[in-house]
Length: 332
Image (cartoon, rainbow, N blue to C red):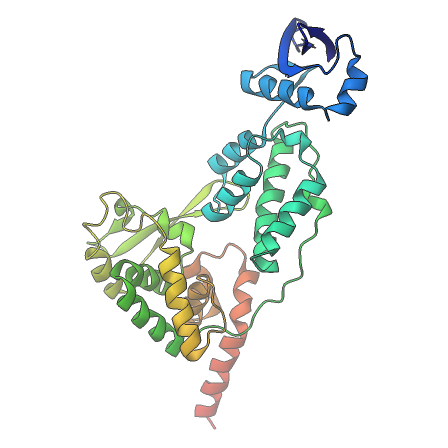
């Protein structure tokens, strides 16, 4: 990029990929008349250069064979192709809004890491990091001129818990949820009886529910993009609960996740009896363990929860072992 002054403002002459030249003003004033750009760049920390790059990105221009892209563009493409946690994505977009993606450095990621850890756990940072890492990796695949800065900030080691919610915990959560709000009660019951994740519950539409055949169609996102269609037949009592929600929303039975209400219910149950796992995802684990406790095999659990990898289901193996010990005691 060639820089010069016009009426006291820094102006840049760019060579587009088609061979044509375009002149853009950064709207940044020069501190002295006739000062060289190389000297001015150090004093104003390249504000003019950033302003030009933003104009180039907004106008869709190509410089020297490459297109300057923003982080917002990468997020938009990612959300069109992959399932995502809305809460985490909103936080990431707010942090890096309007940034040129190639200018985001490992230091920026480290600052965001420290910001998350001020109020959240290390496992929460791991989830934020996973999304950020996926966005930058996909951006490289889509031709963005960027080096992934996330790789310099490592994940925290996590130990997979072997203690899941019990039947008593399940009943307590349902009881407290019903006191709080019927919508939350229905949301919690749906998660317990189907084992679906929050994003899968919120994306469900009334057209996916067949009350006649008592079958629900789930669209399960794949890690590498796209979705798979699965049909499952949950308990009949769940359809009675869904029928009571038919007037809440025309398109979806669960248009949103009542996060604050869930946190209140979770905290009350935790204070009263203690919860081994306070995440909403624990309801998915409870669905799996309930199946095993009633005689289902690990293969049955894999099928019902739509696990693509059988190894994922092995975290419930100890529950299966406990059941086998109980059966063996009957034969003594």
